[in-house]
Length: 65
Image (tube, rainbow, N blue to C red; front, side, top):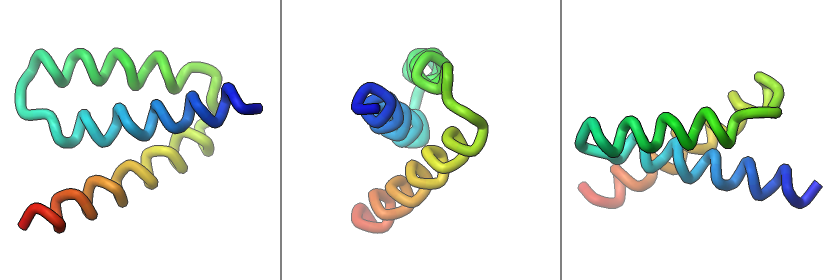
């Protein structure tokens, strides 16, 4: 159970980093990590992680403006 939670946390972290990345090399790296950390999750779990990442990204962008 703890491994799954850590997997979800890392997935959220990598999705946020993907949204924040500004170059193709970083994009490819984060996409690869997103695929790896998403492996084994249900689509519902993945969508929940993506929604959390989008919220965190919006907060990060809002704080920088």
